[in-house]
Image (cartoon, rainbow, N blue to C red; front, side):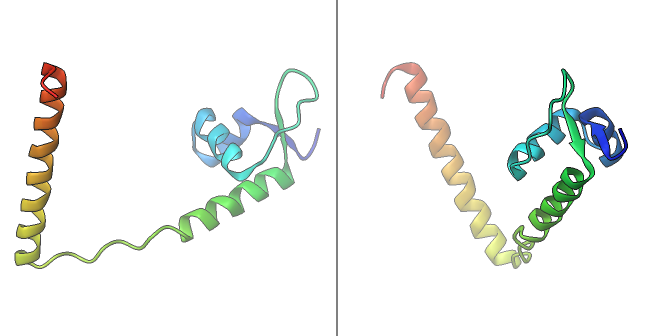
Length: 98
């Protein structure tokens, strides 16, 4: 069957696991054909999957610019305080104090 491949073959071609391929197919809304027990993907399905993957990678947010030393210190301090507060809240919940 020229033009049709199993999920395992497509995953191997794309360099991902079958589970990752399955998740990406679901995200792209592609449902493989099941002529028997094995799910098969057409060349058009694979092309659509690759286009969706490209579109998704281009739509991701650009990396944040590094913070200045002063901003980094205050930002880190705020994050640390929030983390300590969360840990204290979790501890109270676990101790039944809440």
